[in-house]
View (cartoon, rainbow, N blue to C red):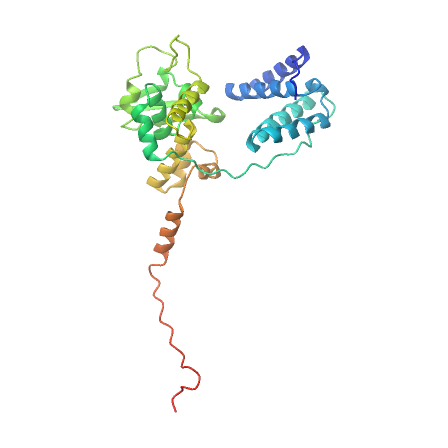
Length: 299
């Protein structure tokens, strides 16, 4: 499908929507994604955003199913539904053309932790500050945007121990003790300069996309099929192995629901088999008495 250039009317309604969304408390990350998705939607529609009909949106979504993964279709469709629901509520439209847009069912996700041996290789060859970023993801469970946003003021010291604070997903604040073995690597970046801890060669703040791409590029060079987020999965899985406490893992992962935490916990068939073996250790079945064969009964 050919792209349609955005009109001034499209740009204006997107600006109005993002302004409302920002005043509602949305994060910069959410605003960025909503804006990108709406501009992408507008470019694919044959009419302006506010002139789209149910048929236009159905055709747009059908085209997505042919080209991208189900999870991405669900994300793009969600942004469209939220935009058009707002447009009706704000008085820009009389009816919602996206109200009956199908909601794709996302397949159940599973933990994808990076194996320990591959993580060891990454940490051995990664340059700084990428090596420290990998540690923050793999040993503290930080997301890419949480790593990128760290400032000098976010790292404090109390009783000889480093603590890291920040704003996570959904604008939820967090505070965590830095693991002892990670401390020396993070300390090496604590200069007296205030502001962003990670900067480009030109002094600009490093963004989450840059952190993600740097990790992915190194993994591709090493022929590893992982992402930076795979290290967060590793963190959740290993913390569960160490504690067997869902509440501790949920709090460390900063999840609102334990259902989300379960996605990050990988178990193996071997663990299940071993657990069932342990359950059967008290089983002491009596041997069944053999029945005499027909015609051999005692006289």
